[in-house]
Image (cartoon, rainbow, N blue to C red; front, top):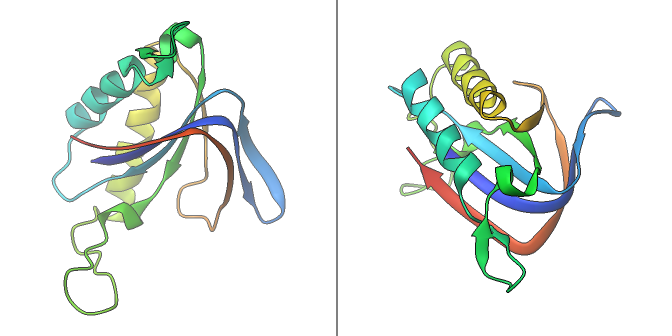
Length: 145
């Protein structure tokens, strides 16, 4: 799995003109499932995300986690994270998991965050989504697991 983590002041998802999810202070998590990924990998990555120290303490150092700050998470499925652009000009998505299995893995990732005490909002799997965010920092990290 790949997760593109962005620390945000706010983020939202709109589908067909309707806002379906919104968070304030927290993390926007774009999640891509690769062929062969497991629910154990999704849970482990959720554990990493929830405890990752990407928020500043009083001294301005990265020393606080999503749990420490009581921030929220917005989980958005993003199969294009698995795009391979090494050959030609059109990305290949052969490494991306099949849609139904990917849906299960992304849902497991979100559920594992909730089990750790994180408030989670979600995009809509398979939908054309408009994702709006105010990146904080900016802080953007790519995690793989």
